[in-house]
Length: 165
Ligand code: AR6
View 1 (cartoon, protein in one colour):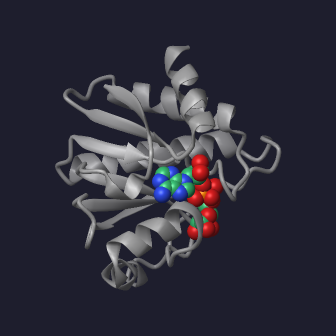
View 2 (view 1 turned 135 degrees about the vertical axis):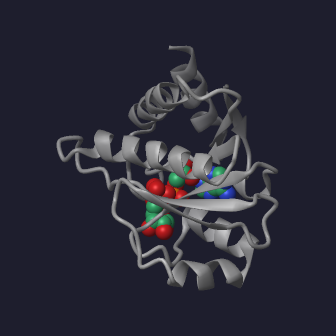
View 3 (view 1 turned 45 degrees about the vertical axis):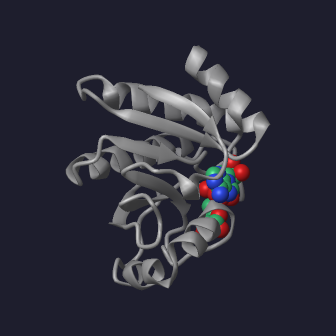
């Protein structure tokens, strides 16, 4: 099941929340900064041991001070017009995050709108990639609750429309 929820991802009581990180995995602004602030310094300490992450993939850590048991740090592509494999890289973030959540024994996971902030991915296109990739993954995996988190009303609307397509 996929649902849309509007608000701050850092407070969600789910098994894993996904972070929109960069390749260093050492923090940043946007949702990344919010997650590190809410989780506390232990999260950055754990991230230092991960050796970064390739664009289009993800790595998992503990949730530290968060309600969520895990944080999955996904590195979305920077939007460069759409001809640089951005859609496949973004899909890779969602697929890898689901694989990691599954391996950790989770059945609930919440995603921010990866790449649609600082990285400039058009929200409508990103929402279509997110929904298609998640539907494909969930086909054959029972009993999951996936939350697409919108920080603002406009993003919530875009995500809801993508779900209804
Ligand atoms: N909860 C849910 N969504 C949020 C929150 C929050 N607390 N805060 C922001 N968003 P962005 P990106 C939304 O820029 O585009 C960082 O510096 C935001 O409104 O956080 O993947 C990293 O370190 C937008 O819809 O991520 C990277 O360097 C979405 O989260 C870079 O930014 C993603 O916006 C990654 O850029």
